[in-house]
Amino acid sequence: MSWQIFLTFSHIIGTMLGVGGATFAEFFYLKALKDGHIDPEEGDFLKATYRVLRIGMILLILSGFGFFILYRINGHEELLYDPRFLGKVTLIAIIFFNAILLQTKKMPLWLGSALSFTSWYGALVLGAWRSVDASYLAIMAWYAGAVLVVALILHIIRKLYLKPLPAASQ
Image (cartoon, rainbow, N blue to C red; front, side):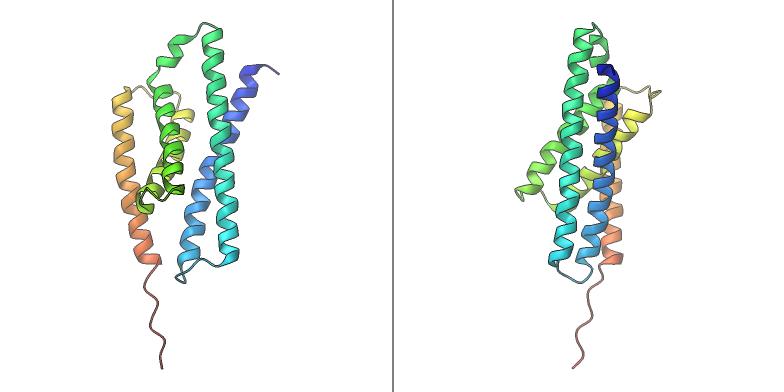
């Protein structure tokens, strides 16, 4: 198996774990908060989901560095300046720093969720949509708009799904 194939498989698996993990993290978190608190079983589901997210992020970062080295060794440095590549690198950096800020509780959860969700799906789209012909700034502008839209959608879902519990009747 060539390094290119190995790195591609690792990259795809990392992306799948990240996108799936981000999706399930949001669903499990909403489900856990439905009754107003996170019980131990729900906490275990969330911990497992966050572990999957971390594994996906690690695979994506390591395989991304592998691609960087492979492109450099094979004399394909021009690929490192491709707007799609730069967009993906930026999104992975956002995922990484967002995870740290969420873990240390320095990022509001509403924004961190929107950043994580949008960044993972954005990385998937940029990786799969090979014919994207946009500048780096255009990609980042679309991403910023998508973060705002996702934050709004998640806010609406939370408002509808997490309605206040009725007071206990006496």
